Length: 68
Image (cartoon, helix red, strand yellow):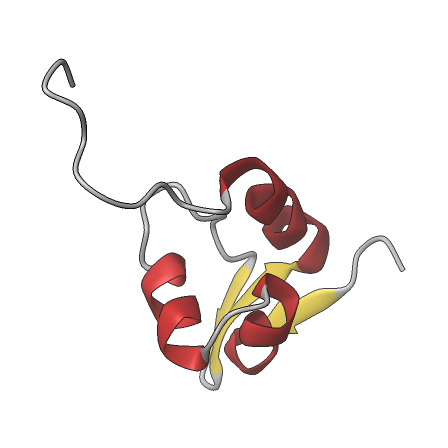
C-alpha cells in the first residue's frame, strides 16, 4: 500500500532502531513532517519515513573533522 500510515508505535520497527532512538530521530529537523497530529500522537506516511531512512541512516558518528 503506497499511502500506508504509521504512528510513533510503529516507527522503531520501520526505522530498525530502539524506541528511544526513534524518538530522537522524530525530533530531528530533517525528519519527515507528520501528515496529521491526532490526540494519540503524530502520524507519518511510511514511504516518507523509509525514504528518510534510506537517505540519512546510518548517521555519522564521532566528531566532525577540523575543517568542518
